[in-house]
Image 1 (tube, rainbow, N blue to C red):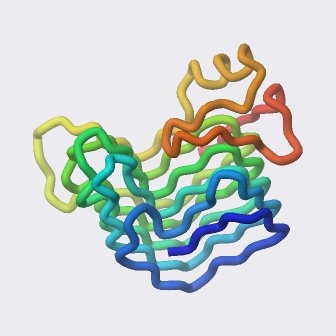
Image 2 (tube, rainbow, N blue to C red; image 1 turned 120 degrees about the horizontal axis):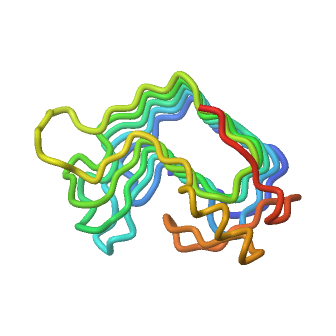
Amino acid sequence: GVRIAAPCDTLLIKRNQIRRCGLAGILTHPGAEVLHLAIEDNVIADIPGTPDGIGAAGISLAAVLEGQARGNSIRNVGANAPEGALVAGIAMQGIGAVAIEGNSIYLIAPGAQGQGWGVLVRPPFFQLALAGNRIDGVAVRSDEPTLWKAIEIGAPGDVEDILNRGDAGKDDFTGATVTLPGFGAAELGYAVV
């Protein structure tokens, strides 16, 4: 996969086929700060997850000031993730202004042993736009309940909790504390879905 581990001004990840990576197809490592990131027209498939229970993601981003994830095809993520693992097609935290548009996200957490999201965004974030994504959890329908969610953007208590603590927050997905380049904790924003 693609691992972003150093601070970057502008980064374009476009038209790649990324397959059979353990943890993530595209991942920002804790400590990397990216001013502008464009992830477009990639095929990310067969990201099984690791047996240690961390989980898996097609795209996992933290500490990105602005950018977009557009036109990506993300499929079959977290098939081998153990019980209790967190699995997402796209997971983000600590973002400024990011658009998630026109992506095809399907077969996320197909074993349903862990928690799964098509798109998961955790605070802090300033502006988020979600539009035109096609999200489907599993290929076979069942009447059995699952922990799978198509889209989750923070939680009502998340923003209040972060503002009361006055820090950048704890990332439930990666276990890393992130800061948003150029913004303080009081400058959290909104999502347009």
